[in-house]
Image 1 (cartoon, one colour):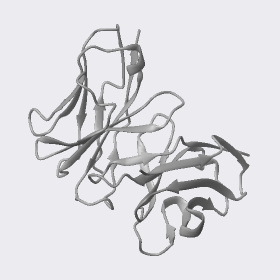
Image 2 (cartoon, rainbow over the protein chains, first blue to last red):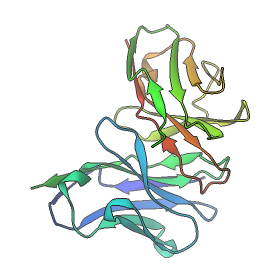
Image 3 (cartoon, rainbow over the protein chains, first blue to last red):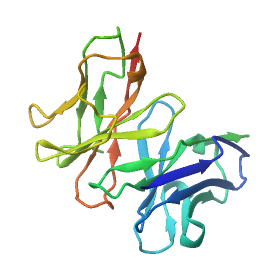
Image 4 (cartoon, one colour):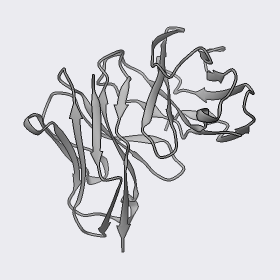
Length: 114
Length: 115
C-alpha cells in the first residue's frame, strides 16, 4: 500500500528565504507523485507532478521537486519565498488503483514573514 | 478558465439528517471523485466515478454514502443519516484522461458541520 509522510505540519520562512517542504513516500510499485497547494478558502491546485520522466520536476510559481528513489523522497523547494506563497501544501502519491485514487499527506502550512 | 464548482460552501445539519453535496465538474471531464478532509487530518479518498458507475471506493465510503450523476452535469454526494464524525470538508474533483498521470482538478470544497 502507498503512504505519504510530510515532515512538519507548519513551516515558517522569511520572505526571500529558501522554502523546503519535506515529503517521503512508501510505495510497492513505481509511484506517481504530486504536490498540491491550497490557498485560504480555495480548492486544491496542482503545483507539479512526477510521472517517471525527469527526476527534477518544475512546477508553477517557481516551485520544483526532486524525486529521489534511494531516499523515497519528493521534497518541494523554492529558492526565494514570496508572501503570496503562504498556503497549505499537500504531497500525494497515486494509490495504484483506478486513476485519481491519490493518497495525501497531512499537509504542511507555509507561513512567510516579511 | 474552467473550474469545478461545489455547493453549498458550508452546511450545518443535525445528526441523523440526510445531506446532499453538489458538484459541477469541468464539462469535458470523464472521471469524478469525492475526497474529504476532517479538520487537522489528511485529505482522504472516498470514491471515484466513471461511465455512470463507481469505479473505486474506500472503506470510508460505506452504505451511508452514495453518489449520482443525475443529469450529465451535476455530480452529487449523499450522506443518508449523518453522524458527528462526518463533519469535514468534502472536495469534489474531476479529470479528463485515464491513467494515474492525469491531473485532478479540485473544487473549493463544501464544509459539513454535523451537530
